[in-house]
Length: 232
Length: 237
Image 1: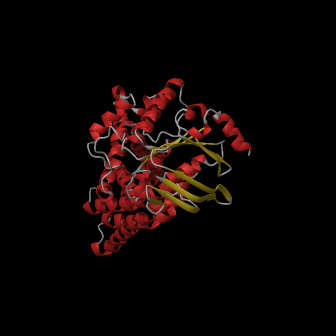
Image 2: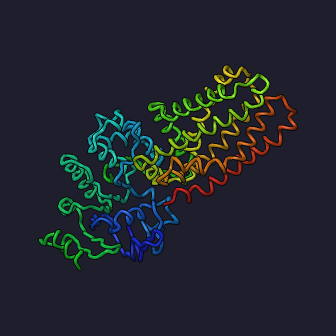
C-alpha cells in the first residue's frame, strides 16, 4: 500500500530525512516512534503530499508522489497536531464543507454516520469554537475518515487529549484497525500504541533505526526495544 | 469506515473542481456572516480614510471631482489588504490551509474559491462606501462606467492579492509582508483604475478612457492566468 525508497528531505542545508526505506502492507497498523526532531512529522507530511521529497521514491496505492498527488489525496485521511477545522462553522458545517471538497455523494447520510461514530451527533449544530480540545480532536478524526480513506495518517493524535478523550480515540483507532484500513501513526505514547499497532518502526535522526512486528516483539517490552533502537 | 461506508468515494477530479470552488466560497461567506471580522474591519477602515481625506484636504467642489478617483482607489487598496490578510489568516489559524491542500482537487480550485470570496467581500465594502462617499463629498458616483471600472479594478486587485496573501501567510511577518509584496505588483492596476475612473467622473471622451479599460482587462486576464499557473508552487512548503 505504501512504498518508500531512499527518501531524503532537505530544508536548505539541513537534512531532515536521510534515506528512509519504508513499506506498509494493506491493513497494517504501523506506529512510527521516535524522539522530537527525528523527522516523524516531516515524513508523514511527505506521505500526505503536503511536502515534496528532495530525493527518493514514494508510492501510495500505486500512485507516485508528488506527480500523482491529487489521486493520492483522495485515498488518504490525515490527522495532524492541528484540527484543520473552522471555528466559525458548526461541526456539521465543517464536515459538509470537507464532504463537498472531496466530492462525496450522499454526504448527509455519511456526515450523520460519522458524527454518531465520534459521539458528537447531539452537538452537531454547535460552533467548533465552543468545543473542548477532546471534542475538537474527535471531530478532527471525523473529518479524516469522512471520505472512507484507504490509508490513515495520524501525527501525534493523543497530543493535548485528556484521559476520557484518549480512551475514545483508542476505540476509534481499534475500529479503524478492525476495518482493515492501513494506518501509519506517529506517537510519543508507547503504552497507547503498544495495544493498537501491528508493527513498530523507530525513527532516529532521519532514519528508520529499527523495525519490529508485534509478534516478533512477543512479550518483550516495547520501551526496551525503543531504548535499544535509539541507543544502537 | 470500510465496513460501514455508504457510497462515499470521491467523484472524478473534474466534477469536483466547481464543487470545491463553490464549497470554499460558501464556507467563507457563512463564517464571515457569523464573525463579520473581515467586512467590518474593511468598512471601518475605509470610512475612516475617506473621513480623514475629507477633513484634511478641505476641497472645493471642482477639486473634489479631480481627486475623487485617487481617494477612492487609495481607500479600496488599503482596506482591501485588511480583508486579504484576514482571509488567509483564517486558513492558517488551525492549519486549515493544510485541510484545503489535502483535498483531492486541483489546487487552482482553492485559489479561485478564495479569490471569489475576497472579491465578494471587497465588492460589499465598496457598495457601502460609495454612497457614503457621494454624500460626504457631494459627488454623484452612480456612473455605469465608473462602476464597471470598480468591478474590473477589484477583480485585478483580488486576483493578485489572493495569490500574494497565500504567499505572505506562510511567513512569520505576514501582516507586514502582504502590503510590501502587493502594492508594487498591483500598481499598474491601480494606475489604470484611477485614470479610467477619473475619465468617467470628468465626462471625458470614451476614446480617451478606453485604453485604460483595455489595460485593466489585460491585467485582469494576465494576473488570473498567472495565479492559475503558479498557485500550486506558492502554497508548496
